[in-house]
Image (cartoon, rainbow, N blue to C red; front, side, top):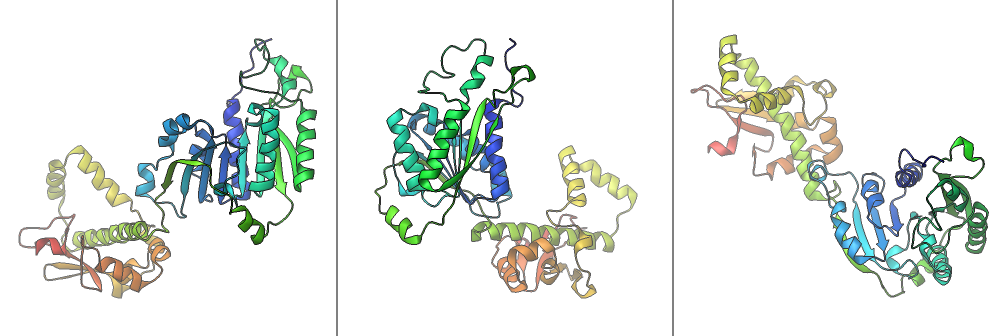
Length: 384
């Protein structure tokens, strides 16, 4: 037999199965038990619905080694996410009961149960389904009926596996668990067998468990009285627009980007440059500066101007050596209005920002008309 090659790889297919569940059910709190190298958590952190993401594993050294995979990226600070997100890693056993994993919408256990001794498997199902009692649980485990398709396999697929079940054995276990803890279960899997293999099922069999009852507040309060036993290895809060600091930065970035664009347009209308001047100015710019200029003229962090309601009374104007860009014009940018909500809030944010000139009504830019003008412009207060 030819070696079985999965494309995408089997572990990627298992992870994608969980991600698809997240996309379907939009859980806010998700945990991965036996998170190992944190690769599933690394992918799940980009799903906007998740506000709390937790990994639990018995190998503390591995968690400490892989935790940096879950640090926010530069893009998370440049473009903060809409909802808050906290990512945590805990060192502990899946057989232990800890309040840190109460109230979750989805808990995944990917290729985990086959690593548990018989006694620990009994404790695990009571901890997971009886104590943690998440709204949904997804469990994957090897399908031993598939094993003969691995020509060089002797024994189990991994040296640490304590068992590998047939489809019937897994489904009997899962059905008993569902009946005992008032869940329902559906069966699926990933890793299609080749056509010649017949009915051997998926390489990894999967059970999706759904809780059939609503847990009472009183029951949750009793569970929260349990002593914490997990050790926190890692915890980070991602930049979010729910945080006033990041919200303010995002509003100012978008509003002032539009103000600067309007200011440049006004200067170009009032003092159009002839072709020779434009060529001389372009020659002075480096390649990077020319690229930046083109991008600045073509794009904005904001919505296109065509989406902004026109109002002649709100056009920028030149008074003396100062350009005034009305703040009321900036609130008409849809994204600015969405983020800050009202004109008064925007005025306050701009007035309190030390990086820009403002008279409470307009953003102010100083222009040196006697010695030509800088098309980029300078915030008013920097010339005082």
